[in-house]
Length: 279
Image 1 (cartoon, one colour):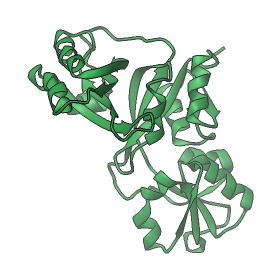
Image 2 (cartoon, rainbow, N blue to C red):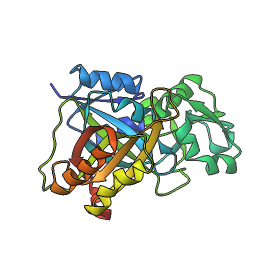
Image 3 (tube, one colour):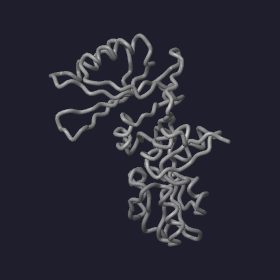
Image 4 (tube, helix red, strand yellow):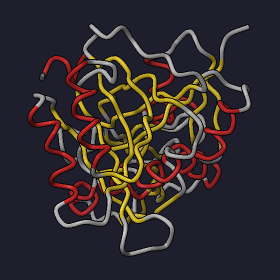
């Protein structure tokens, strides 16, 4: 029996494609929500979860940053998937027939120029694969979906226009979650992710982050978001290129802790080949 990796969405979603491409030895299973994907791993129903966190065109997937701190899971990997959107229609439809395109709002944002050029109205749906399924069910030649080639295969749709994404660099970064922290060897090129809440004192964030610069660590992501319904305090999510157990990281975290109320380590994992190649 194969191990299971879960993803949010329906069969044919880009997360499904990422599971199939990067973990072909696992059985990929769909979950209705990110929360249910987290729960599947926490409960032991699945070994891993493939979760999108950001896209080079549409930005971050905001829900994830609220789920991660209390999710009870560890980040054990990162994967970068180039996104190639297809315009999918029912059998017999052609591009000139299409009046409406259904898809996830982030996917629609990534093909805005194409839709405008062809006078196609966007219609936001729950996800890309779900939109493809609905187009197949509708059987309307004027309605298309913006989704993956895998969705076309899954729901028997034709590709009316291939690779319609506005930007060639369109790429989604996924994190891989596990119930067990599995850090690589300290010598392995790694990324460490954590959340922290700074103390409410002047220049706290500036002073808290100084240790990363003085220890030669590359802080590649810093996101802030409100927690607890307060406008006075923000929690920060950070990605740093470096191993959590390295001397440089320990020194930086010691300085961070001095100016922070709390620090939660979310995982240390091997640097993806794409990131490593650019490092």
